Structures are given as structure tokens and as C-alpha cells.
Length: 177
Image 1: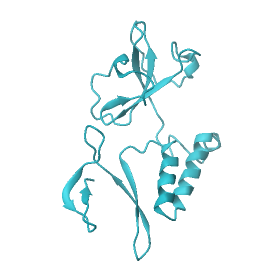
Image 2: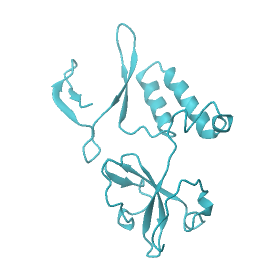
Image 3: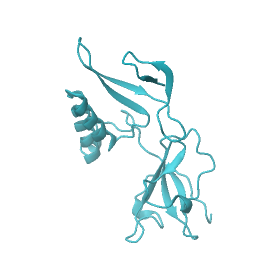
């Protein structure tokens, strides 16, 4: 099985995977964002052997494992989804983890926002522990009472939001949702 990474559903520690965790070679993760494998500049893009098809894989995470050529081979990582089945906050072993505590605090912060600035900070905090993807969270002021609006937006190949030719009541182009 030289050059191939076996697929399994077995949970493994990073320390048990060859060429992943050492002092000179820390674990590097990549995530598919807008159709490309992003590593936040941790390694040069030309040093990664890309998956053959990255379309419709938005948000998928890969562990980049250094191979014999000195390049990085992506191995798909199964991530837990934020739902009651895979990330049950009623289970004490889950609820007591630092990530679960951060998520709960972020959601409470989001529920208690009083302004657009509060919302911006709450969304940034939540995004540290949850992949939000193309979800856009807006502050909507109104005479009847302010609100928070969640929408999923479309993005172009460069990651920019796509707008229609329609105008909002404020005279701005309407975001394609």
C-alpha cells in the first residue's frame, strides 16, 4: 500500500500516524474553501498533491501528510457535525471539553447581542470553533425591534459574495442567497 492512505472510520491520535506529528513536522490541516484547498499559508500550494475533484466538497477537511518526495498528500478527515447525534452536549464527556464550552459561550454571546458590533464579535468567536462556511449573519435594525438574520450566500470562484442587479430599499445591490 505504498503511497496510499487507508480509509477507515477508526478514531486515531495524530501521534499514531506516521509523518504527521513530530517536532520538525507539526500536523497541517487544509480545508476546501471556494473550491480550493486552503492551508492559511502554512505550506506552499505547489507542495500539495491535490485531490482529483474538489467540486462540491466545500468545508471538507484534510490532514496533509508529508510523503517520500517531500510533498504533502491530503488524507480526508472525518469531522464531527454539530448535532445531537455526533456532538451531544448532554453527554458530560462532550460538554466538558474546551471546544464544547467555547461553543456554548459563543452561542450565549450571540443570543445576547445588543448591536452590530456585538454581533460581529460573537460571529467571529463562534467561527473559531464551528465552520460557518457561507452562512452570513446580519444585524437587522427595525422600529419594531432589532433582529439577527441568518442566510446562506453564494460566492464566486474567488470567494467573493455574488450580488444580483436588484436593489435593496437602502439602494445597495441585493446579495444572492
